[in-house]
Amino acid sequence: MTPQPGTTVGEALRADNITIKFGGLVAVDNVSFVIPDNGIVSLIGPNGAGKTTFFNVLTGLYKATSGRVSLGDTDVSGLAPHTIAHMGLARTFQNIRLFNLMTAEENVMVAMHSHMKSGIVSTILRTPAQRREEAQARDTARELLDFVGIGKTAEEYARNLSYGDQRRLEVARALALRPRVLLLDEPTAGMNPQESARFVDFVHRVRDERKVSVLLIEHDMSVVMRVSERITVLDRGQNIAEGSPDDIRNNQRVVEAYLGKTGTDGYGSDE
Image 1 (cartoon, rainbow, N blue to C red):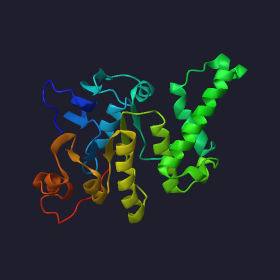
Image 2 (cartoon, one colour; image 1 turned 45 degrees about the vertical axis):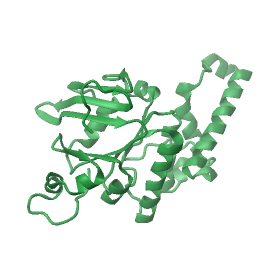
Image 3 (cartoon, one colour; image 1 turned 90 degrees about the vertical axis):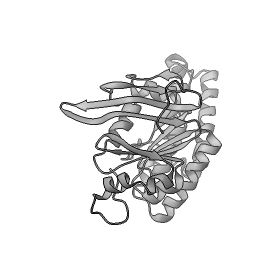
């Protein structure tokens, strides 16, 4: 969704003219992008299109060569990833990153510490206020695990969870940051078709019940077409198309980007 000059109302996240270069390689070339409040948007493209690089600019892992990223009305360009996360931009990763020797509950509680008020001294002394806050955090962690459908695993080590439950735990941990925007990087990777179909419903629940805007990078085009309200397509670092699922499905530039001009019907895999 290309932003119009001067429009900020109703925008959860906005990227203006993002360019990122690695030496002589232009990985992302002057891309502008908007996620509306309570929107579900997908970012797709063939291998090497620049999707993950663009994701990493949004979350502060990479600093853009030029351009600006805004979370709501706040310019977050160049801020550290943990600062951007605390301000309301949470993410999961293509390769699951959990604390394997912590329980599911502890993994979620870790994400809450940036919002907790107890300092080092009160934590060491175990003051009544600190104990109350920790109990509240534990209750919230359990509620989030229930929300993502893995409440019964609260006391299990993360490494012992199934692949699908680890994916859900990552989402629960991201939601513990109280995000305004949730970025999901290849969330259905490794899932079977039935799990992927359930995930589509789950994303809508996250948006509707948690009032969170969602941005996905996703390789499964059936998931993209069912879950997305808007889709942006990158190819060789450039924004080549955006619109509704129907618009993208019928866009010849998108078909050629995935398949080549002599390709057959269908879409290739995402990066």
